[in-house]
Image (cartoon, rainbow over all chains, first blue to last red; front, side, top):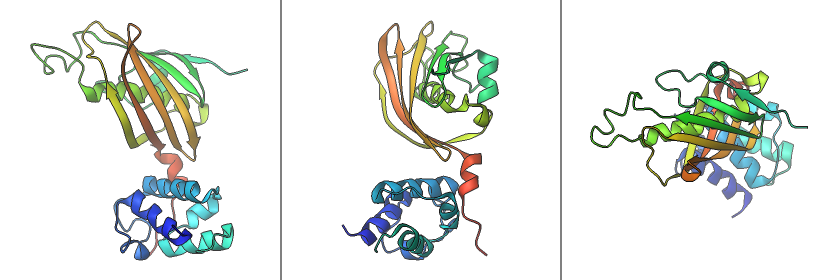
Length: 79
Length: 157
């Protein structure tokens, strides 16, 4: 599984959505992505990529696209 | 040296938000903040659910046992000054095991272990015993909503 697939899989596992659905997801757009779901997603990504995200990055992580950008630019994870 | 705390019923209620008829831990014998808690719950026939569960075989419902376990678990982190009185919510309950029926007159002793506590999300495990015999256990993930709210993204337009 490459990094992009791992990233998508974290959304799928955390929110119970299909891989096709995740690309347009934004925070609070679906019931599962609430404040609890948000922290579960962050924990899943930290486990998968072996990183520890800064508080500011967690707050900025407002969508699937924004998360990709943060992980690539701040944590050097090639997608 | 580890700080060891203990809480009576009023002390427990100063730490967590559960109240009668849904408060299911009577005493915390020992709590080591961010590490563990040992609690007890005494069951008498006066408990409100015994007449309904069941009239010919009174025993503690499974959901009550799960609440006993988690309310002891909560004390592993809600005993810390900065989190006292904060509202919590379940994230997940896994590996729940019931091995022995609990009946009026039993005293449930619960050992809770906090495995991790980060950004308001607590993960851990609780074992419970009656007369030294393993009775039930579960793994919990519980969140402090007030802490989580500090990390949620700003609502988009």
